[in-house]
Structures are given as C-alpha cells and as structure tokens.
Amino acid sequence: MLWHDVAARYVAGGPVPGAAIERTASMHCGTCAARHVGLCDALSANGLAALADAACWCSLPRGCILMAEGEPGAHFINVSHGTVRLSKDMQDGRRQVIGFVSTGAFVGLGAEARYSFTATTLDEVRFCRFERSRLRDLFLRYPVLEQRLLAAACNELALAQGQMLLLGRKTARERLATFLIDSSSNFSNREGTVRVVLPMSRGDIADYLGLTIETVSRSLTALRQQRLIAIDAEHNISIIDRTALQAIGSGATN
Image (cartoon, rainbow, N blue to C red):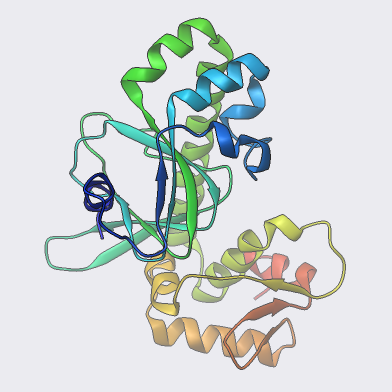
C-alpha cells in the first residue's frame, strides 16, 4: 500500500490494520530509539519541541511503500524503528535493491524534484516524516540541523561507494560475508555467537548483492558447513566466528 493511500484512508476515517499516523511527533520523543542518533540529538529541549511540531509521526506494517520512485520528493523521513528496503526497478522488470536502512537512518534526503528509488517497509516501521519546506525556518533558527543533515548526506555517499565495491569487485562469498557483518554492526562489541535479525527475504538479499537466490543459498550453506554461521529451522542466522567472516568479506582469504 502506498503512503498516500494510507494517509487518505486515515483522513476518511477508514481502518488501516497495523498503521498509525499523528500530526506531530512530540508525544513519542521521550521513547524514540533514534533520539540520540538522528536529527534530534543535535537539539536542545526547545529545539526538539520545534522539530517535533514540524514532523508527522507514523507507524506502518510490513509491505507499505513510503516513497515511490518517480514521485515528487517533497518529504524525507527519519526511521526510529524497523527496517526499510530501498530499490530501483528497470524497464524490463528487473529490480536492484540498493540498501536496507533502520533506526536513525534518513530516507529521501538526497531527493530533488523526484525520488530516485522506492522505499518499502520490511516489518513494522516507525518514523518521523518531514516536509522539506517546513524545515527551512528551522534551519535558520537552528543551524546545527543543517550541519547534521549534511553529515547524513555524506554518510549516504559513503554507503553508495561501498555498494559499488561490493558489486564490482567482490566474489559471491565475499559479498555475503560483508552483508552479514554489516547487518550485525549493532552487536560489534558483543563476544560469542551473535544472532542477526534479517527481516528481508533471500530474494531481497540476492537483489541487493547482485546474485541469484540459488547462489545466496549455496553461499550460506558453505559458511554454515565451515561453522562460521548457524542457521535455525526458521532460517534465522547466527554469526559464530565474526573474525573469520570479516576476513572473508575483506578479501583476506580465498
């Protein structure tokens, strides 16, 4: 379901299972998981209240389209919970997944006239939605906001460069190892086995890594046989040997 369809049904009073929309984000700031990693971390209490008044707080279930490729890029969002898939479609029907983003990430920040990708929720996603025109006054009042957005844009560029290396030079095994390490980055300081929560499908992973589903499955099986990862009956993945997996991802081993 497209975002504007969800919003229209809310305005009309129609039910949208699993969805919630509020005109401002102020009631959720105190419990927001992105409070110290997004725009909000740069502001004082007064600045945070002003930013919350300019944001629409939303919660959407799996399978909703937040932004559609080609639509006017009048908004951007800051994710506070859940995972969003970013993808581009080719005219012949092929799809390239260009990224997965979660807590603290900005989506649609680099858009000018129109969005260059489609953003889809992979599980329950909570986020703040900002109208670009409403932020201009806030930039004048709180210059640190513009600085934070510039830093986020630079981070998006660095991620894009990493994706170019991933697709252009790395083998299938190296690509998958890199993906698993990146997906477990929130647990980088934890010792022992780390369970990686992957809400995306094997098909999503394949489209992100530029591989087939069969190649992803074979590579996962090979890593499991090497006792670098474990895969349970529900296809959840746990990293057993992070150091060895990092070495594979960096190209240090054959």
